[in-house]
Image (cartoon, rainbow, N blue to C red):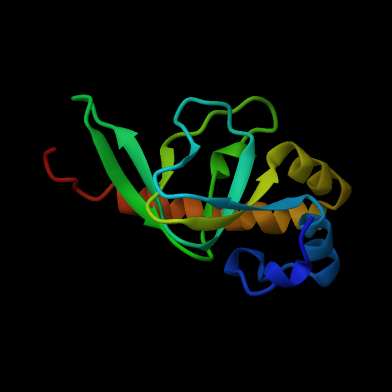
Length: 149
């Protein structure tokens, strides 16, 4: 559990009421990761949503030739692990997420978030609206022509 004041300045949570922030803070863990630590790995069970508070995380995928390709760098105030909220049943991460520098993040179990969504449909709607927005941005960035690797 964390103090809800940590969530307030984060854009991802900007539309949420104090009561909603309180419920999310009650299931959030503050974690500190050293450099070159994987927060998640592609094709592994997607169980957590991460909110980066400090530091940087690179999202990587494997190209068709087997090379590891960085596709995006995520910084403070941004979210990774949205695959964990796409399906309430078993889902998998779509990319690796590796810290580039020491990183402080909130870790939130997706199954606990789904419980909150079922208890408060407005909360679920507002979070899914943010997930859709982030997904659109990332798809737009990833579908631009990529140089040969």
